[in-house]
Image 1: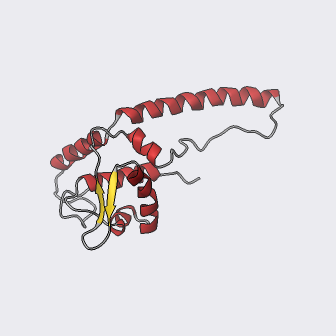
Image 2: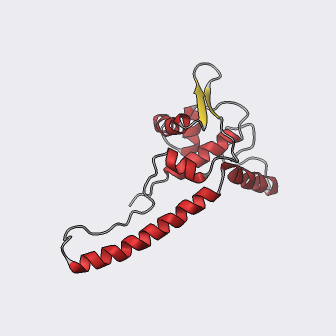
Image 3: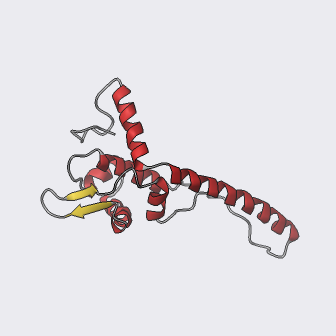
Length: 157
């Protein structure tokens, strides 16, 4: 089963934008994620609607981060990308009148709800500034000065 990596990908792009001294094109970001620029634009549209980023057309245009990194949590970003389901697992619903299915579904449902609540709380405690600070810490401690994305003249992620 394929995992939904939309949140991780968007956070990856946002950190690139946060550490860029110029707007970045959808093509630039698509190369970082090894995906199609159209998919990048589609996902970034939700972030633009929330005021986290902006886009400008034309020469020198592209996407730029506009939010205060310290005020935007991972939960905010998760919600902006459509709140994809955390879990691929679910309950059987083939026999809703079956008492065994009811007991199993109730038990699993409670566990899924508790796990999701915990994840949402954690996402609400971590800001984009926290991610940026951790990147900066690791970058400063790294043995070399260029990361995996050599397309950036500034700090590479």
